[in-house]
Image (cartoon, rainbow, N blue to C red; front, side):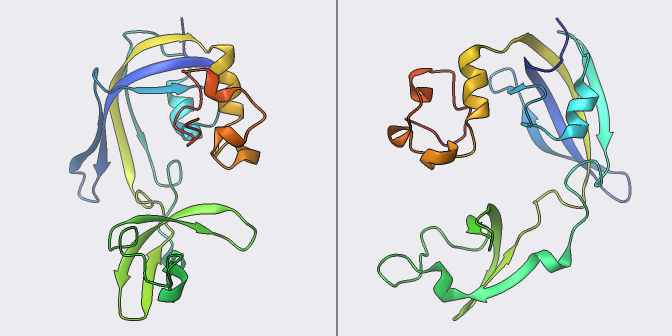
Length: 195
């Protein structure tokens, strides 16, 4: 069976960041104990990653590089913003130091209601500096690995994939859903819909 749309692929690999000098540093590993499992063609992976994997078969090796424009884009200095610390207060009108600290990834809501992740860069007495760039923005990524398994997606998995992203209307709480996504143990695929 080959990797194609609506096939579930299981991969093991190492992902390297390629430096300007050509040196490579391993930054991510998917092992046999903890492989990467994704449904091809459902937007779970970068389009360029999926293009490189298309047509690969079980036990087939892969080795490809994605430039920043194929991966997470160039680093944008305008993505670094300094905000009023009061935006990060909890319900008790105190700064939420448990979740907001240097290096933490925090969800932020844009003016149009979209939720995006930001990394906390610096905290001062009255300000918090965040970086909206993806942590791998500006990086060239080199993937080396092997396809371990390819199978058809189940109807339950496909339904969950189409229902992911915080379960849409139920905001990540399946108890509030009209759907049965929580009944399928294979579903939700890390979308936050934990049932």
